[in-house]
Picture 1 (tube, helix red, strand yellow):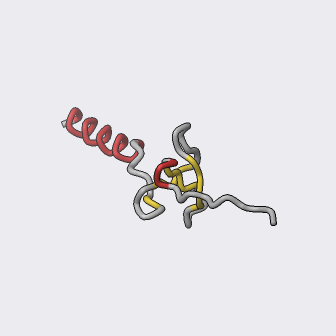
Picture 2: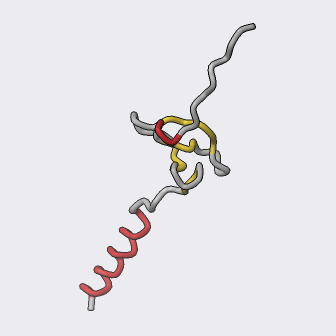
Length: 68
């Protein structure tokens, strides 16, 4: 019985400690995180205040600014 209670306690603790999938952003192509990886960039911020980390190939291209 003690083994069963110990096993259930461990399962409950690991379920709360393992991080889930991050919130999606930018048309489901980005993820809301505190830090982006080296291969990702920040284009917008999520509603929860975290950065929306998006791979560069999914970010919109910036038009060149001409100084006329």
